[in-house]
Length: 96
Image (cartoon, rainbow, N blue to C red; front, side, top):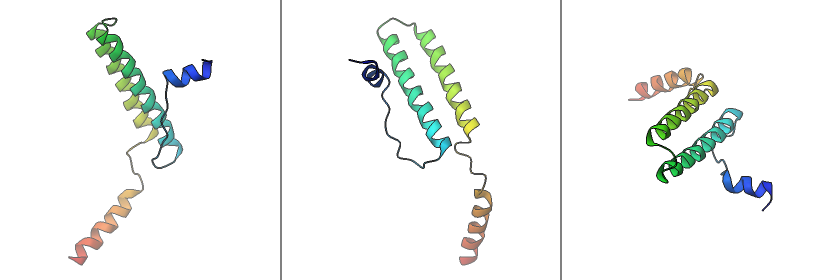
């Protein structure tokens, strides 16, 4: 097994099917890395090679990194939708 095959086995990546823009792609990569690391931590804790407290601490740190990444990338924020939503809301209330 060559290095690339080992990397693909240890760090599998799934195809991204969401809305394609740089922020979403970066967040998806971060999310996949997060899940892979969580999987390793859980396996180490389950096998007794990592204390539950240490597993919790590591998972909490990874979660904070993921949340920071989401915030920095602006995932879930819609800066241009406030005007659109207000206009749509006014139209729908007039139609009623």
